[in-house]
Length: 123
Image 1 (cartoon, one colour):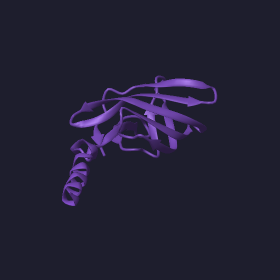
Image 2 (tube, helix red, strand yellow):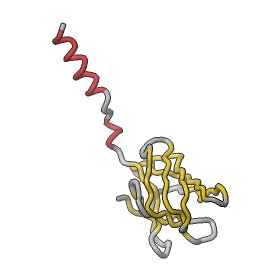
Image 3 (cartoon, one colour):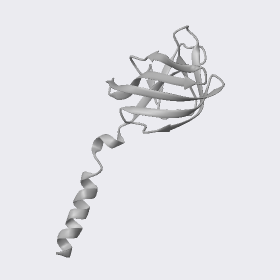
Image 4 (cartoon, rainbow, N blue to C red):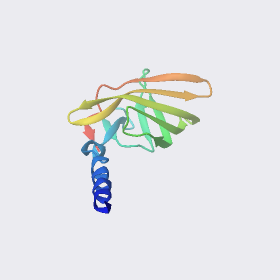
């Protein structure tokens, strides 16, 4: 009976770690002059392109649930404490990328935009 219990425990560990768990999920961040987008994993600092052609600066971010269908971050947004929600992950050129972002600061809730691709580079 003890052999059966050990076998079940080993089988449960093997089944509990699917191959997709090692896949990375990215958020598209722009460079300083917004000419290049690059996918980043759990970025501490990131500039998201905004509707007005300026960037939304995310600084000192801490993320939870990264890699899931929705991830939540806390940090500084354009100099103000705030929260970020990235969601709607899509496979793009073999990588998974969050394509929508919402953020909240003291003045309200805003949508930063849709990102149809991670950018020109991944990593």
